[in-house]
Image 1 (cartoon, rainbow, N blue to C red):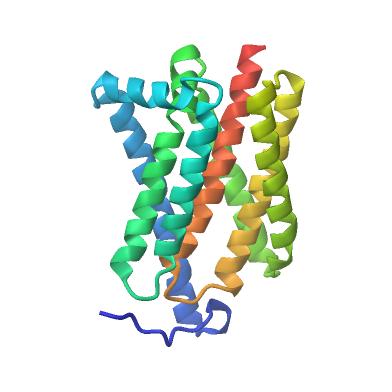
Image 2 (image 1 turned 60 degrees about the horizontal axis):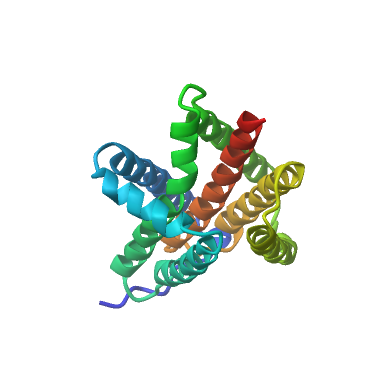
Length: 240
């Protein structure tokens, strides 16, 4: 059955409608984060070891494997976001969100494996998770309090993302190490923070009140990016 298309932009909706949309968006974001965490717990604690080993071999089999993994993830991400923005089916929206969460969970396996098994006593995952939530909470509060529209950041963030992808490809090809990688990780934390500001602003100003699934996916993608590079920084510092 086709979905109704008479929803208004959140900024123009009645106060009660806007509040309901924001609650649904962040409830779905919380659900996505919990589902991601649950999938990682299952993979590392309950799935047969061969599952994790297969994922690691596929992703880390050679230095070029990661290029194919990133390419596949970008394709899956595009499909998931297209589904999440569907105007014809709520079920397809949830399928898109679920697909993206699963893809992120698989993508994170090598990084979480390194954090858990190389430095088991340092609780790097927990520390990075707490730091990520603190940064996300602070940025979210700042955007809501300011009430400003940060949609103008899009061009800068897109260019930054393209440059970051170029650096990642070059790093795989030429095997950058040490301080260069650490500086890049801090730059990526800044980029992820920018995406959080931008997507939070979109929640307030640009999404329709029926697009809470798509909005939660966009926020989850930014939070996952932030978590990845904060955890990378903790790992790099632990190796020194």
